[in-house]
Image (cartoon, rainbow, N blue to C red; front, top):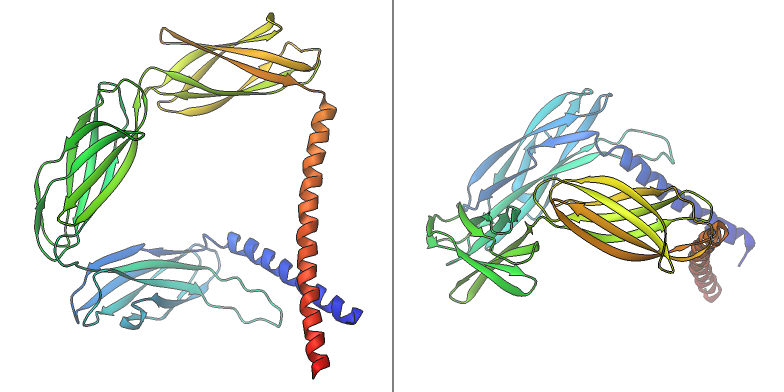
Length: 394
């Protein structure tokens, strides 16, 4: 193996990596350069039927661009578009249409195609990098299933303890036959069933969707996250869906406390709280710092949180601690006539120790990069060696 060949392959490898990174950067800068609407169409299968779908393209850039229309996916051979290219000035819109001639038969279920436009590649010299903007819309053809077949979607509003929540159930009949059905709902807290509800009974035509609404009163002991689960069983088939929602009480949970404190300096506590109430809450927080059960200082602050919000607060500690070591921080919350407190250990370290940890992380990252580079070089060397052996055999 010659040094000249090694340098050539290494140079190619580095150039390829550079071009890949550059391509990602250019792609990111072109993401919003083109628009296409609507985002998709959905239709029901009818053997041999012809349907036309209209689209509008938008050039979000400042310069004139020519876009080519393309189709891909399972149904691409059944779709034709006209015109097949658009020339748009900056900020201008243009339209095109696509016609689907459905095949004589398709398997039950959804069948999809992607209809898109892509920026026409500019003419350029050898070695020019061209990153083209493109955007796609989806066309879905639904073929009805034999017998009873539905899809279910759930949504539920956050609520408070002993207050109602509205559960919305959307059911689409994907079967060939018209049906009449109702949906049972279970309310779960973890693995435990804490409530039940049943929707009204409704008639749903084939390939149509109906919305069911049911109200469940949150007669539960604890605030927290709950799950509404729909399990519809029909003969040997089960159709299910789920959604999560919050049941609140006037409770603020103290999630965590971390610190950035160095001897003799103003420090900082990072306090994480979660409001379990559906309404905004203002609370007073007091942080007492202790060492060996001796109070060294306190800090008070007023904090505001939105309903069901989990939030991080930065609280500055302006009574410098002079010694390194382990301390305790007692966090006391007062809100709406309630009180809560938690005790956390934290450590005061010299900045040099923090720097050492930072340097250790840097060295660790550098070691990983070195290993990756060595692995790439090893693969390149092995490839060169294989090529050299093949040449020798010849």
